[in-house]
Image (cartoon, rainbow, N blue to C red; front, side, top):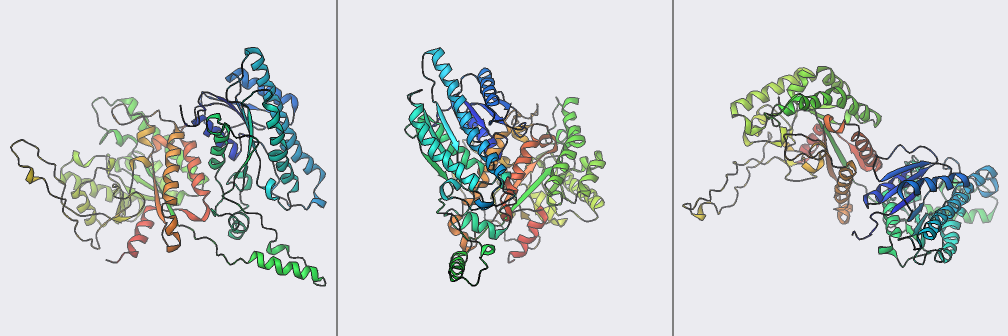
Amino acid sequence: MSFLGLEGLHVFITGAAGGIGSQAVKEFLDQGCKVTAHDLKPITNLHASTNLFTVTGDISSEESIRSCINQAKQHHGPINVLIANVGITDESNSYPIWKIPLELWEKTYNTNIRGTFLTIKYFLQSAEDVQSSTGKELDNLAIVVTGSETGKFGQAGHTEYASGKAGLQYGLVRGVKNEIVRLNSKARINAVAPGWVDTPLIEGRLDDPNEMWTEAQATVPLRKIAKPEDVARAMAFLASHRAAGHISGECLSVDGGMEGRVVWKKDEVVQDKQSSITSNIMEKAQSIIQPSLSPPPTRKIKILLSIDFDAVSGFLGTGASATNNMADYSSGYFAGQVGVPRLLKLFQKHKISSKVTWFIPGHSMETFPTQTKMILESGAEIGCHGYAHEGGAQMTETQERDVIAKCVELATSLTGSKPRGWRAPLYQIREHTIKVLEEHGFLYDTSLTHHDSQPYFLPSAPPIQPIDFSPEVSATTWMKPLPSPLPHTEKTLVELPCNWYMEDMTPMQFLPSAPNSHGYVPTSSILSMWKSRFEFLYHEHDEELRAGKGDFIFPLILHPDTSGMAHVIGMIDEMIGWLKARGGEVEFVRYEDVAREWKQKQQL
């Protein structure tokens, strides 16, 4: 059993198509739950799962929510947990209460208050029916209501939303906690109250740095807005009898420690100069909006998104096998004919087409000239990746020299200038490879991982020799440290690290002849791993940030044959969107640009 002990429970989540709701669905699925996801509109942003059932309906309609609860029970069985998450607000307008349109007030209350009431009503009726028929209490009966910090601090211009949330998270929750124990002796109800959360609901609202500072940072000790997963994990905690079994009737703030809300903004100064009261207000307003605190420093995080267009060549070099057949080569054709156009379309959607780097084997350039031209026309950087994806151990030094020369020739003919970047196929780079790359004027390599998030000069040292443990050999012959690398020169390559854990193919592509491939790993696992790596790197230098540290690079390595697949590309879309949501701290950058900028800053 996990710490939360939610495995096997049935969770009903409303507002599941939204930012917080969809993340809650993913969180409870990851906890091993069966989930029914409910929303007014069709739910299209969730990956299919045997444990996921979706229903569509209007929670403000009594018949609709009754029907949806029954459908959920028939599909997944008795419902143990309700996440009453749905909520609406109109961020496009801001009305003082004496100007709020009645229809806006009623629409907001109809969904947020009436809808939550009806959802809780029929959830508990469903529990009552099950308990009556079985003669025993349901396990882990729990309700989590999504409130808001506006319900705690208020929000000028949105009284219809703030007052409703206050009623839910304090009045309703504290009243219901005393009732549900009469239905189920261990039943609980609590609320989460998020502050600003980075979801499409507020898209664009905090793009202005001044607005971000005023609304979400000046009063927040953690100096940032929440991510949907922050709220979803708090929901999972409160839903768990094992973790929160003695907590009921409470409202848990998920707001970074928010102290309050800003009352006056610069554009809200009253113009009545004849009033001494107005003058006093203006003076106080200026003292509020000009705090002595300076905005927090921000990081500069460079996202190095790269694509290895291996295609058929992946089965000719490092993936060569006597058992390779048409079915294997077919996935290579898929990479060129389907995967490449899909990825190009995705990059265009996110407006990063010219900010990514494609590493293309010579074989792919010549076998798929149309797709290679599409890549070039997207504005992307073109780097070299061997000819037939041959590994260093498969070739003599003479053969490798011929391969590199051919790759340089093809890339130069394609782009009009010599390539600057190299990624060794399967990362199999040798000391000899480095020497030849320097001779051809390459700027950088991206095959090694001496570091995981910072550029460095590629070390020049003799090959590491294996130890001979033969009985007749004295141990004194191998008890020696490695020699120190030679000093770097003008020709020394910049190394932009890559990492097996930051690529898509090994875990999510089944290659019959490759013993280390998987192919059936859920995309959610890889997405979670990538996000976890980013979060650690982001906070690794928190205490040193004001001293100018905290910047890092974040490489991601994709393959059209893998990330172009229908069940994977949605995850890539989500990851790119998640990174972009970091705002100005994050920038998608070509490998060449990062290597050149870093090298210029070094003192040779």
